[in-house]
Length: 316
Image 1: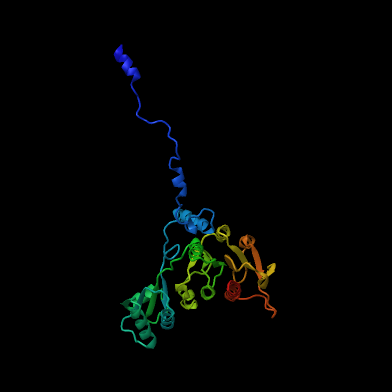
Image 2: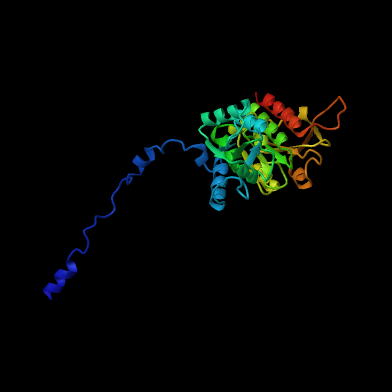
């Protein structure tokens, strides 16, 4: 029985009882929370929303590919076109020169420029060049241009926000002339824009002709491509951009618009039809350019340049 009594009286725990004190909470309260996180990491911040949307989209879409749906190369043929393309910095890959060609100044210039840029120089018999060009009059020189590496529309806004700038983007709704596209790329570069968006189908792409018209600015001004322009504009609106559409029957004159000093996307319609119905309905503003001289409309490239100048003036 004595043994049982000892077991009942034995301490069953070595833990101490409640102690008076703060439990270290006062010390923890005095500690800092560290440096302020960057804007892209702060929930609710505009940059955070853009980064989140971009990450979500990157998880869904496949890796970028060169050259559009078919991924085919473009060929520039003829002595003058080839020399001009190389002179303007078109990103060519290979220069083909006919064997035993009767060389002139243009051929020598093309070979020299290709050599200076480290391009592949290939000598080929005339029948092979005829086959490559489907019988076009190549004059013994053929320039192979790889497919253009398009950006994604979200990349343009993300790059602007990362640089601490308000995006200035031009969206083209059905521009079919590559020269107009090249001229608009040149204007975007000149007036501090962040890129151009073009449709995947029924529209001009970044061909050698567009590169030449851009006068080399296409090398530093990204062009993105999208399957659905309405969705792109809606995504830009969610990212905080004001979508301004150019329309001859617009409700607001260009000089009265005050949205250009913030994040903005400028939509330019096709040469003949203007803005498509769905794209026009998506715009926040429909703006017209006053023309006291009486002309009915402006070339798409000229109209884009006028509006980009006004945007740059307001931002300055």
